[in-house]
Length: 249
Ligand SMILES: Nc1ncnc2c1ncn2[C@@H]1O[C@H](COP(=O)(O)OP(=O)(O)OP(=O)(O)O)[C@@H](O)[C@H]1O
Ligand SMILES: [Mg+2]
Image (cartoon, rainbow, N blue to C red; front, side, top):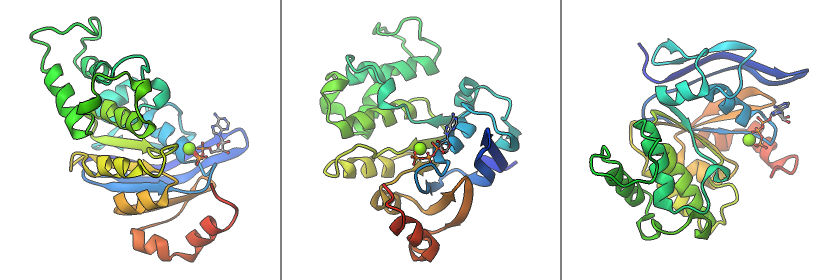
């Protein structure tokens, strides 16, 4: 059995528009991989195929050697695949602590009694505090999310996702919209993720990609153009053309 995620020959089209062409990719425990490519290359579509939001036209997705292609989105989360919550899914008028309790209770099947602090809560409160610490959010734990700096809201998303204890973590543009003054927070949070988690990060901020990724996969028009170390990718003239060429955002 191979540990981690194995994607083989994934294809997807929206009508006549091919958005995934024969994509194969592995994510093993401890991996730090980045998926980059121009707007519309198919990066988010690829993540939606992995999480089960979309079904591929053909190809296979295995987790630890088991085919997960027929599992629902919720079943894949339970199996260990998680994509970050988006700011749009945070409860903006609730505190950071309350937001973190939600996935922790969900994981334990305790959603029927969301905000009740109770003895014998299975360690929820301890886990809330340790997540706050890990993401340096302890000081703002009792603040409502909408009062936080944007970068900190993105950290709350990451903390909530981690609360699901995934083994495969997909970060779709964790630094998007974050002012550059706050982007070190994001890099730091990614660096502090559990070592044996498999991480795929999709990001346009190349400084961040080069800081956190050990391998970079370049997607163009739904197909993998090349894959390599940051140094290899930086030196690839095709990649340079892509990014220096057509006014990429
Ligand atoms: N549900 C859909 N139906 C039809 N076309 C879609 C759908 N979702 C995405 N597309 C198209 O598929 C292509 C790939 O989109 P996708 O969002 O995966 O790109 P991306 O690489 O994530 O881009 P960005 O960097 O802008 O986030 C685009 O041309 C997009 O317009
Ligand atoms: Mg996208």
